[in-house]
Image 1 (tube, helix red, strand yellow):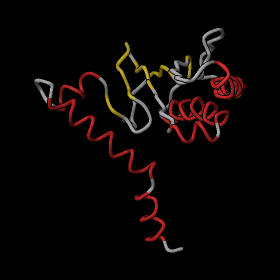
Image 2 (cartoon, one colour):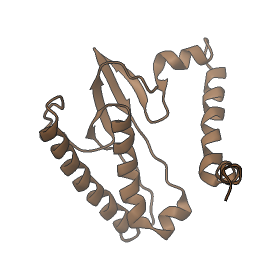
Image 3 (cartoon, helix red, strand yellow):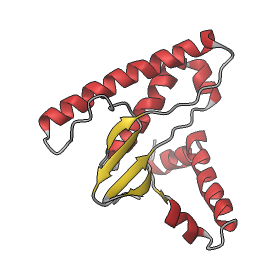
Length: 162
C-alpha cells in the first residue's frame, strides 16, 4: 500500500472524520462569546491531548474520551479499559501526573454496564502500578498516595503541547 493511499484511507476513517467535529464545536462556541475565539483561549486552552487550565504556578490538565456506541457494544471490557488508558496516556503526553478519574456511563442496567466497569477497574489498576513504577524511577514525580486515580492531572511548568 502506498503512503498516499494510506493517508487517503486514514482521512476517510470514522475516527479522523470525528476529529473535524471538534473544530466545528470550537468555532460555534467562539461565535457566542464577546471576544470570539480569544475568549475561549482565555478560559481553557484547547490542546491535542488535554485542555490546560491555569492553576497557580502550573496547569490542571483535563482529558476526556468519548467511545463510539458500536465499539462499546462489540468490546465493552476493552472500551472501558481504553477509556481510562487513553486519558492516562494523554495526561502523560502533556507532561502531567494523573490523579483522578471521572466517568459517565449510560447503560440498560448494571448487568449491561458490568463489562465496561470491569475494564475501567483493570485500567485503573494498571495505571496506578505504572505511576508507582515511574515515581520510583524518577524523583520529580511527587507522591500522591490516596489520590492517584486516572485521567486528570496537575503539572508544574508550561504546557507546551496546547
